[in-house]
Image 1 (spheres, rainbow, N blue to C red):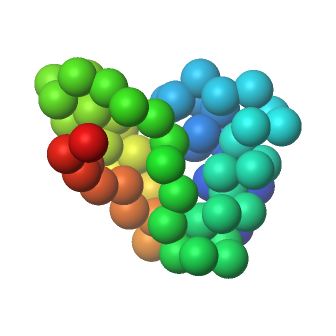
Image 2: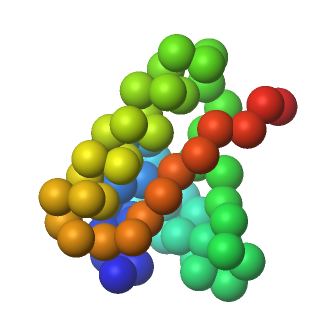
Image 3: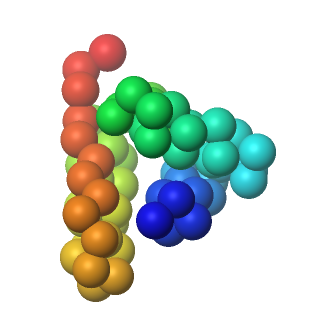
Length: 68
């Protein structure tokens, strides 16, 4: 659900609620959104955290790393 995506963006990526909602709406309408730009190792950890949170909550949310 949208609320879960906002929660992930706020907790894992430290976005304030208005920014998290904007990113979530991008994901909802376009199928993708940029959660942030990080060094590779940090991005890897964040992707793993999102995968764990989504799996535990039973949601199909997926985060990926793309080279900038």
